[in-house]
Length: 465
Image (cartoon, rainbow, N blue to C red; front, side):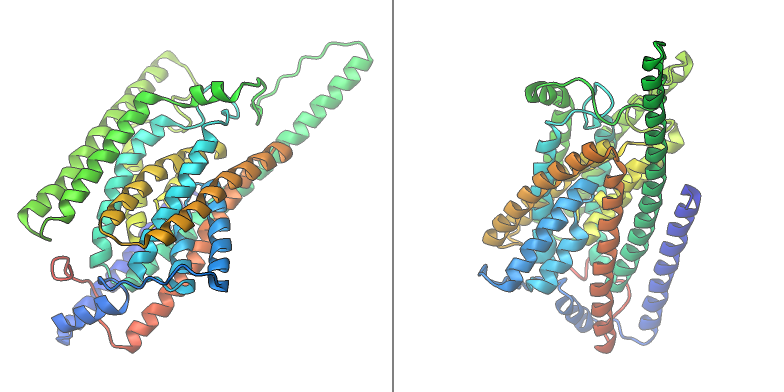
């Protein structure tokens, strides 16, 4: 599947789903079915309301199974750079019995824990090919503000969009991205196989030349998968940390948090509410614009001097069109995170691979960005008392362990096999599993809503608050 075909698939699928929702809305309006009593029943029926269902934290087979699923989901999700929200939310809702909003809040806690432990692990890992940080701070600064803005928009749309439409959009996106990532992994696997064969031939040539007392110069076109120089953990940590860049990301995080906390106390749809909602746009655009201009100028300078080395890990030309495309993808990733209760990595992980970032850096950078977006949601959910503290601490602890050991084992496996494409296949598998779980839960809930003759169109944002 080419990039153009993939984009065409997403646009056509999303357009068809939204048009269908508008048709249902108009059809229901014609039948005078859209009334306040029905809206209230809808909000109560599929967990969009304020009713909380919090089971007690007690030893049971359900808790054991949820722990295993959470551990594996966190381990694979952080390695792939997608978090795992598409697995956590159905697991918490169906297996443990949490209501939808509480499941989304606890999912954020698990993503935050797994992301934080993965970032800590990655900070002590060298870049596999260069003397640069394994975290691509240029990409993080480019995508983090747009991702957080998208999450805010996604939360708003989750109130307006019908449940079935959210399910359909997520299935379309997840199947497309998982398929795209899977084919990308196959391409990388083939390239790695050819590279191994080439290196084997060169080694054989070297052995033969040594036996014949001849000097052979080996010219390798590919960079090694593992860095040759051994450095101490402290040296690697100092190389990976860029305090000025991290400070900017923290400032953006705090700014969004303050706006969200103040906005939650404001009356929905009041003038003050929309002023606070609008403040998030200049915050995001300011940081994104700064990084976009920086990349654009450095790209122009690089092209004028004829240097072929990339500014950052992404092997794309930083033209205005490409930068705008990255902004759109960041917002889309955030919207998906807001609708789903994930950290937005389902879009960032495949996108980083698509623009030429190597799997190790793509995974580390996507997880790094998700740590900020998920932690923002966790703090906000905590202030709103949206999740039980004992369950949150337990599941976060499980995810912390899973994130660390998942990175540990997969990195060791990559070093042993010499195949970074393993990360891409894990990424594809987690997204596909999320599509299945979200699809099954969404279809089942939608069928129940149809049988109960519930409203299936768009809701008004102000009337449904």
